[in-house]
Image 1 (cartoon, rainbow, N blue to C red):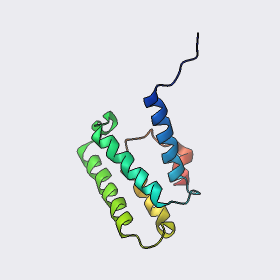
Image 2 (image 1 turned 135 degrees about the horizontal axis):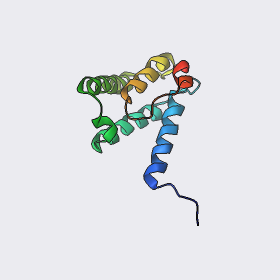
Image 3 (image 1 turned 30 degrees about the vertical axis):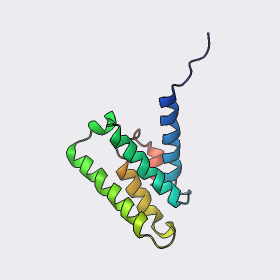
Image 4 (image 1 turned 90 degrees about the horizontal axis):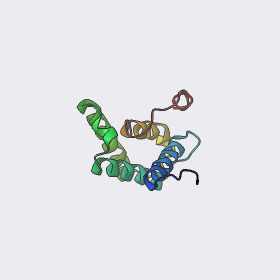
Length: 112
């Protein structure tokens, strides 16, 4: 009997979670590609009507959208890199992806 293989969706979800954790890591310097990846990740989840999103309250969905918009505007308006805004931007990313990822461990929360 062969060991259970991960389904492509499961592998994709695991890779997305790892990418998100990497982006939110305080030691990881943000770049434009990271920001674009986050925005595309959120857009995909919304387009797919992800069940995790459907469980969120309307006020929470509005909050997610607000942070999505803030991230988008920062990307459009940025003049230099994201170094000076990294902490704030990572907080916005965490808020914009609320409900789309497993809850943060206490270790992750303490780093943010």
